[in-house]
Length: 172
Image (cartoon, rainbow, N blue to C red; front, side):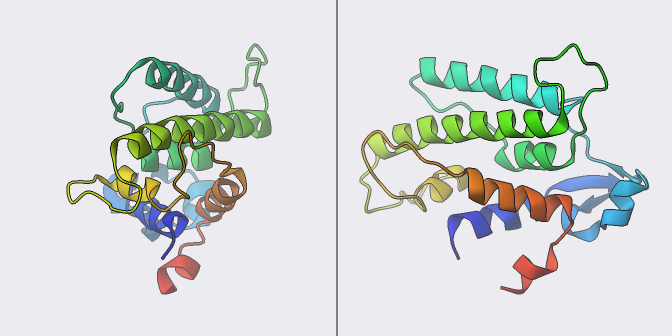
């Protein structure tokens, strides 16, 4: 199983509120989302807020020698399901522009983090104490100063989440 399949499976375990009951994401349907029966309980109010938050995390990560904690599943669920602000005051006013901004910031953030991880560990061996993110990082090609482009894979993952297309990956 590749890194993106693992990440998708991790996202399907993200817990949401469906009719006031906590359930994993894989138990919801597209109809539940459309009828607004789902509360994702995310720390952002809109996709624009998430894009701004990702940009701030990226700036902090570049300045900080240590890895900052991020909840990658929560971020991906946010990109997939948060709606755009109705206000036109934002520079990233449309849903599509905000989604692209989020994915671009996430690309840069993951590149910065993977470079830090690869600089501290032998590229051929995953540490036994590695967290989920570090295990995911070792699924990517190992190079010094890693610059990854994961936009197409993230776009596919986000589309599967938006469409509540959980069975295709769970069967694999």
